Image (cartoon, rainbow, N blue to C red; front, top):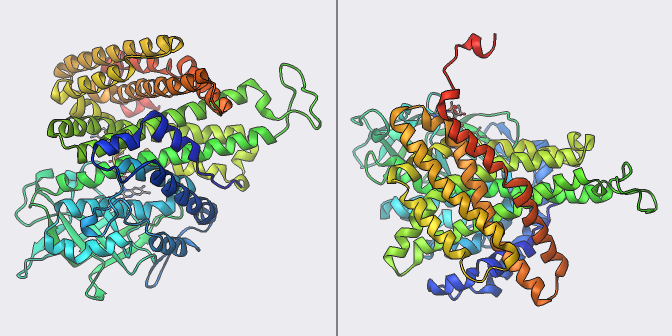
Amino acid sequence: MYEYRAPRREFQFILHEVLDAAGTLARLGRDDVGRDLIDSIHEEAAKFSETVLSPLNWQGDQQGVRLQEGGVVAPDGFKAAYDQFCRDGWAGMAADPAYGGQGLPAVAYIPVGEMLCGAAMAWRMASGLSEGATAALALHASEDVKARVLGQMVKGEWTGTMCLTEPQAGTDLAQLRTRAEPSADGRYRITGTKIYISWGEHDLTENIVHLVLARLPDAPAGTKGISLFMVPRRLEGADNGVSCSAVEHKMGIHGSPTCVMNFAGAEGWLVGNPGGGLACMFTMMNHARLGVGLQGLGLSERALQASVRYAFERVQGRPARGPSGRAGGDPIIAHADVRRMVMTQKALTEGQRLLAYHTYLLEDVARSSADAAERERAEEVVALLVPIVKALLTETAMETTSLAVQVHGGAGFIRDTGVEQYLRDAKITCIYEGTNGIQALDLLGRKVLMNGGATLKLLGADIAASLAGDLPAELAPWAAEIGARLAEWGELSTLVGTRAAKDPDEMGAVAVDYLQYAGYVLVGWCWVRMARVAARQLAAGGAERPYYEAKLAAARFYFEHLLPRARTFAAGVRAGAASLPALTAEQYSA
Ligand SMILES: Cc1cc2nc3c(=O)[nH]c(=O)nc-3n(C[C@H](O)[C@H](O)[C@H](O)COP(=O)(O)OP(=O)(O)OC[C@H]3O[C@@H](n4cnc5c(N)ncnc54)[C@H](O)[C@@H]3O)c2cc1C
C-alpha cells in the first residue's frame, strides 16, 4: 500500500519557473498572491493530503458507502476529514470574497485540487462539486437565492450537487422530464427522478443544495425548455421532499455515493432565466470538466509514484547489460522495458500538468485582466482547451494507471498493493461531465469549426510567440516539429470541415482522433517549454542538476516515443467516415 506524496517540486517548477504565475497574477492586479504565499498554501495542502486524506483512499474503496434509514453514510473518516477541511478554511479558498470566500486565483488553487484528487479522489468529489455549484449560483442566482445558501456553501457547511441525469436522459438532456410547477409564493415545486447523482445524499453536512435541471409547464420541447433550480434537501429545518432511494454499486470511486434522487414536490427557486438552465449549468460544467481533468492528473501522479517505488524495490531477472553485482540482485528498473513504462507515465503526467495549469492561468486572465480584448481572447482559448484537458488527461489516466498495474506484475492485480484501485477509479473520469466522445465533438464542432478555426489561430499565435526568441539550439528541432504539427492541425481542421459539409457522419467518425492529435501536439509544446527552462538551468551550472537532466530526458522521450502517436491520430482523421459504414448487428458480431 502506497501513500500519496504531493509533488511540490513539480508545482514550483511549473508555476514559478515555467509559467511565472506570480508575475502574471501581479500584472492582473493580484500582487498579493506572490510566490511565497502560493508555496505556503501548497505546503499546508500537501500536509492535509498526505496525512489526512491519503490514508482514507483505500479504506474508503474497501468499505464503500451505506444507504440506511435516515440517509447515506460515507466511509469511516470521511466526515472527520471534511470537517477539518472546512475548519482549516479550504472550502472557500477559491470562492468570491463577496460571499465570504478567499478569492484565490485559479492557478494558485489548482495544485490544491490536484493534491486532493491524487490523495482521495472519491472524497474530493464532494467539495469539488460544491465549488462548481457555488460558482454557478454566484454568477446566475438572484440575490434572494444567494442570501439563502451561498454563505453556508462557501464555508462548506452545506455541499452542492449537480442533478442533470435521468434514466432516459444521459448525454441527450433534451429528453429530460423532471417538472417544475410555479407556486403562488414565487417558488417552484420540483418533481422527478434523477440518477447517478454524485454525493446526492450523505452525512458530511446537515444540508445539501441541489442544482436541478427541470422543465416548466409551458416549456418548449428540447434543450431550450430546460431551466435550472436550486433545491435544498432541508428547508427551514424540515425535510423538503428530497430523498435518496438507492446508491449504485460500481466499478470504482466506492467512497463517493452515486445516488438515485427523488424530488417529490420539493420546493425550489429558479436560477437564471426560464429556459436558460443549460447555459447556467455550463458555468458549473466547465469548472467541473477542468476538475475532472485534474482527477485524471491526480491519479496519473499517484500511479507514477507507485510505479517508481515498486520498480526500484522489486528484484527480478537479470538486466540485458548484465548484473550490476548489487547484493540481492537488481531491481526491475534495470530492465529497459520497465523504464519505458515508467518514463511513459512521467512524460505524460508532467507534460499534461503544464497544459492543465496553463489553462487555469488563462482562466485567471479571462476573469481578471483589465483589458477587455485580452479577457475575451483568453476566454475563447480556455473554451477550446477545456474539452482537451478533460478528455486527454482522463484517457491518459487509464493508460498511466494501467501501466502502474503492469509495472507491479501480478502484485498490481492483487488488491493489497492498492494500485488496481487507481485503474478502477480512473474509468469514470472518461465518462462523467460529458463522455470523452462528447468532449471531442465539442472541440471539433463548437470550438473549432463553428468559428472557422478563429480560436485555433489565436492559440497557434500564442504558441508561436512562446517559442520565438532565445530557444537553446538543441531544442530547435522540437520547436520546428511543433510548428509543423500545428500547421497540420489547421489542415486537418479544414479537411474535416470540408467533408463534414457533405457527410453528417464525418465529425463523429474522426472527433476523438482529432482531439487526441490536438492534445499530443499541445503537450509537445509544453515539453519544449519545460525543456527550455531545464536546458538553461543546466547551462548556468546551478544546483539540482539531476532534476533538470530528468526533465530533458523526459522531453526527449516524449518527442521520440509519444508525440509520434499524433501521426496515427492524424491518419484516423484523414481516413474519415468512409471506413465506418453502418453494419447490421450480425455483421458486427455473428
Ligand atoms: C459514478 C457516476 C457519477 C455521476 N455523477 C453525476 C452527477 O453528479 N450528476 C449528473 O447529473 N450525472 C452524473 N453522472 C451521469 C453521467 O454524467 C452520465 O453517465 C454521462 O453523461 C453519460 O450518459 P449515459 O450514462 O446516459 O450514457 P449515454 O448517453 O447512453 O451514452 C452511451 C455512449 O453513447 C455515446 N453517445 C451518446 N450520445 C451520443 C451522441 N450524440 N454522439 C456521439 N456519441 C454519443 C456516449 O459517448 C457513450 O459512449 C454520473 C455517472 C456515474 C456513472
